[in-house]
Length: 436
Image (tube, rainbow, N blue to C red; front, side, top):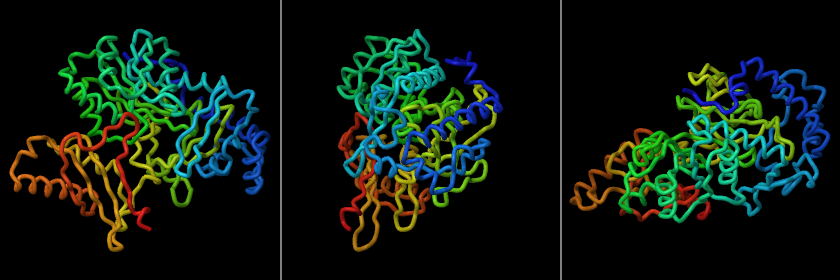
């Protein structure tokens, strides 16, 4: 039987959703025009005023927001309320040394809890569940976001954070944990350590896992499910918008439902900013229509995906976004070919002898880009003869070439030689910028 946290809202018809969005959008535009000088200036340059928003389609006339806007207004320039109303700050790491800072009012936190509770209910959790939160706690939104949602629904919430994996496994067994929240790479780390400790998936009571914060493929999903004996669900969020629970998979796992009473989603062409045709992929753009402290209009997430408005078998009516194919800012251009790390992962995990640990190294030698993929493999391959290893390298290289249309050097490395992650895995090392 399908579980809902807020069935009335989760099953609103499309007309009700659009009416809700329009009412909130009008209020949002008036709010930011009045209270956020940065947005007011951008709107005035375009000749747009709050009274110009007469239909939901007028959203497309509003300016985009980018991560650079957040850096330009660091730390609190986009806040729409006085600091006296802000009860929490989160921040994401920045490549320029300055993080992007997000502020939440009390009502913002309550909205976040509500969205996360809906997500956990989608994968079968309820007040009888025991939820282990193994995302990192702190300025990163993952840990506290999942934590407050689990508590909201009344589940036993275990704030394990990340790290100390043997202790995490002990707690999972001793506490009878039913739901695990962490990054997919850390889930694989848990599975590996579990095996080293002599445990099997039968020692756990795990029902589902809520995995996000980094790209992962369906092949990785199968690996996690087989090793931990649970159903692995994808959750999506980003600190600039709110944190985890912007969208989540239902049991049909055919896209992630976006909570449209809080967010308006668009898909635009990454280069032109124009809307794409229905069903086409492009840059996911999100407007936060229900946030007080740090509202954003038309934020370019840089995640490449599609939107699906067709009815879902679970009964929820909120639009589904496809699992992001990659990020425009994560996309590698190698010898003129667009390459997403998730494409490489899917190919590698289709080869049975390969462990789900790899690293992509891009370099520039003699003015030519090179692609090297370091892959951990089973001990049995290392014990094979030289010809067997060479044949294996050739097979992996041919599969990569057939999918990407580019040759890659395959370097086989010993098991456990690639660093493990307790948070977001660092899959790509791009040395080209160091050689400029």
